[in-house]
Image 1 (cartoon, one colour):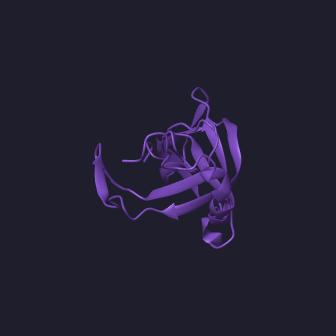
Image 2 (tube, one colour):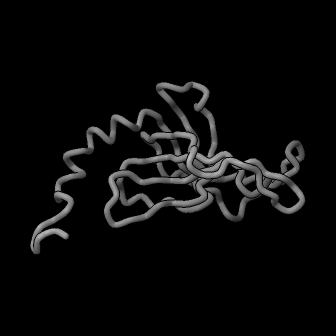
Image 3 (cartoon, one colour):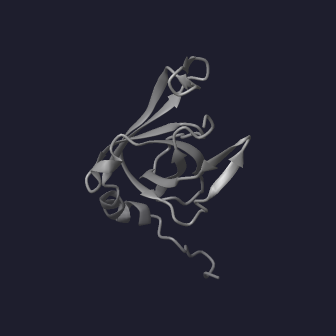
Length: 145
């Protein structure tokens, strides 16, 4: 337990380490929020798709496949769905990202196969002391498989 009147984390920790955090975010992404009202049925895929989306964010990020969560299959309705989890980190900000927002990777310095990948946000970790904004995502679409 710290002494009374002392801090565990220095108040300028985030400012001091911002350059280090920025160097880990070597990809670029755009985040959009699908319109909840504008959908159309896509005959080729057999599912409804959103036709409009509002831009939420465009900028640097880090994208990595998560190994910590079970990557197995799950039964959803009458289908078996394979889970492919990803962690997307953004610079710490007051940006409000919501579940079901769509992350599109627009650039990746070290993995060109990642460019164009679309992920859907399934969870947003929130906390009072954050140096990055963590988004837990699955390959798009999450619910229309």
